[in-house]
Image 1 (cartoon, one colour):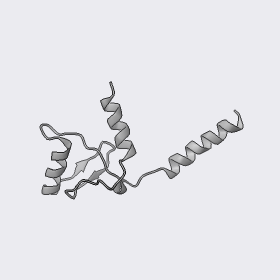
Image 2 (cartoon, one colour):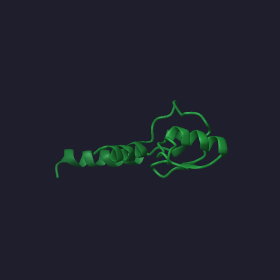
Image 3 (tube, rainbow, N blue to C red):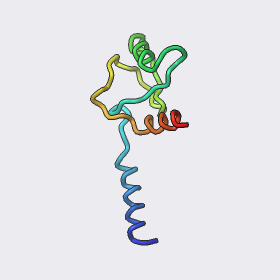
Image 4 (tube, rainbow, N blue to C red):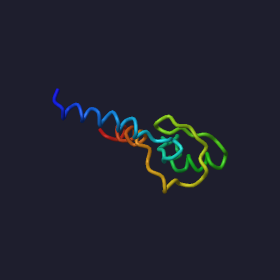
Length: 86
């Protein structure tokens, strides 16, 4: 293995360690439920105080507003992309 390869491996390891997102500090994607789209599901959950589950597995009770100021959860996006690509 060359020196370049090992530094690349080290960079990937550091990125995976330092790149972890706090689930509370990012916007998550939820799967639609029956006739309810994801947005309607989140609104209904916020109104009723019901917990929802993100594609990444994170569980929370929505506050009723879209988290437009938060970055997207990378794990949710990866899962969503794998589900939508055919």
